[in-house]
Length: 126
Image (cartoon, rainbow, N blue to C red; front, side):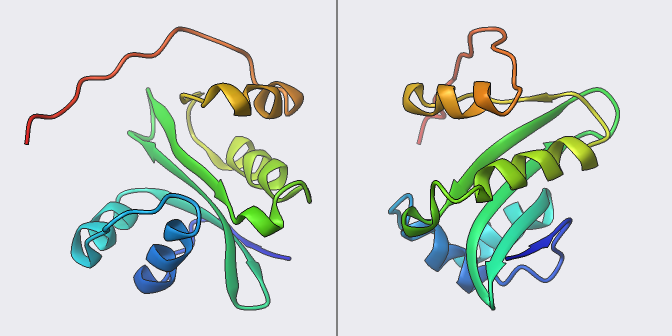
């Protein structure tokens, strides 16, 4: 497995194809390109195939958040998500905050993350 920290060469088309295998959606190429340019992208490749990605959005001083941690279903339970999370801990300039789906809480706790404040969201009106 090849891990890259701050993967500036993350291909947008490859990323969209990857994300659609985990979170199906109708993702816009230019919007995705812009989003990727604003995050620290930590990636995992099997040969040249993108199999995992963790994205961090940070102001570099006060606040950082993990926007998502995704691993292709067929690559889960192989330590890839744990390695991506460890690389995030080792390479972020700030404390990290993030939300979790209930079914993923045990994974984060197993990896040394502490449960914190309840999260809230505000839906954007279309």
